[in-house]
Every structure is written in C-alpha cells, then in structure tokens.
Image (cartoon, rainbow, N blue to C red; front, top):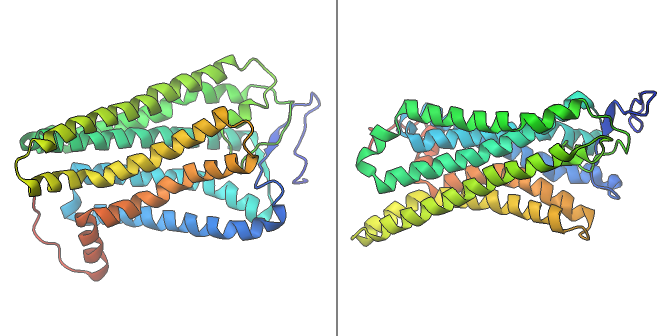
Length: 322
C-alpha cells in the first residue's frame, strides 16, 4: 500500500488519514526528530523515576505525593499516546493512519488532557486542606478519599470525551484525508467530515469551559484563600515554609494552563499566524508540561530530592515525619 495515498472506498469516503509533520521541512525531518526523541526519552525517564520513587519511598506515602504520582502517570500516558505516530512520521515518513487508530488516539489525547486538569485541581484541594485545616489533614484526605478523588478525575476525563468521539466512527470523510498534525485531534478530524457536525463543534467548547476554565478558576480561588491563611501566620519562617509547599504545584499549574490557553488563543484568533506556529504550539502544549513537571518537583520539593538521593545511593530511609 502506498504511504502517500490511503485506501479509498467507491463512494469517496477515505478509510485512513495522512498525518503531517512539518510542511516544507520534510528534508529536515530526520534532524527535527532528534530533539523530539530526546524530549520523549526525558519525559519517560523523568515520570517513570518519579513513580518508582513514590512507590518505593515510604516517606512519600502521603496524599500530596499520591496526587503527584497520578500527575506523572497521566503525563506518561499522554506521551505514550502521541510518541509513536510523531516519531513514525519524522523518522520513517510513514504518514498513514487508519480511522480506528486515529479516533482512538484522539480519544486518549483529549481524555488525558482533561484528566491532567483534574489532577491539578485535586492537588490544589490537597494544598488547601493542608494549609487551611492542617490538624484534620490526615483525617480528611485518607487513602480511601484520595482513591475516590482519583477515580472521579479519571471518570470525568474519560467519560466526558466519549460523546464527540463516537460520532467520528460514523461520519463520512470526503473533503480531504490530510490532517495537520503528526497525531490525531478531534478538531482536526472534524474539519474533514462531510456531515452535520454541529454537535461536535459545540460540545467541545462547552466541555472546555466546564473543565479547563472551571478547574483553573477553582484553583485560583483556592490559592487566594490559601494566601489569606498564610498571611495570617505570625511567624515569618512558618509563612515561608507553608507557602513553599505550594510553589511546585503553582509552577505546574502555570506550565499546563499557560500552554493550553496559548494554544487555544492561536487556534481561535490566529488565522493569519503561519501554520508552523500552530504546529509548534501544539507540540509545546503536549510535551512541555510532561517534561517540566518532574523537573519542577525535583528542584522545588526537598522530600523528592532526598528521596532521589536515597533511591540512587541506597541510603536507608529516615523515620517518617509529618
């Protein structure tokens, strides 16, 4: 089968799509793939090591680090979802992808993005309880409660994306068969459908408002309340210590939402912006947070740094301290 011309049914409905790397830079794809490869490897190593550390180090068996493990697992899932097709396009110029594989990839990409937003919200709730109600922290955020929150975040992400993805399997596609990225996105596929796509155009907007916008607003409000509590602490040292426990999470929130908002603004208002900018922002959105999150927590969180030291030097763990 030719890689440049996917199967076509008699009615003109394509049975597969063509992914796109960097248009006009095809000759440089092998060179472009090198930084992508190292970024992917860094993401896999960073988040896998973080998960291993949280699993092995009993000092990190606390709600804050359980949520961090959820974030690392989500970042791993997102990376493993996009990595195969991106490297296949850049390395092998293998652009063809079947419908089922494409729609499945789009489902997992969008679901995991919503899951990440939910995990960041759960982490904000964790910091809110730890600072606003420290004496009841362990009784409120029990292991069972953390498990319920994690399950709720997963269900919200994976169930909410089903309604716009399922119709993709039944739409005819005859406008074109060329997608604009090296991975499948719902908004990319829907442009190629020859059917009434009103629901598929409106529902994602509502979903983004009720998940990304609402989550970010709740996180913002929670930190306003946290700040008020921190400023009421008499000791300057205790204020700094309390606020330092939030710095890593604030950085991760900024990394995630700034890239998501930037990508949304470019897609919505950047019609005259060169396509290469759209592509670059898409890759930044899907690669930058998974790359930076382990780095941020490793640099900013003393317990994680100490845990890495114990993990790689076989130092015995000190007795657990609250």
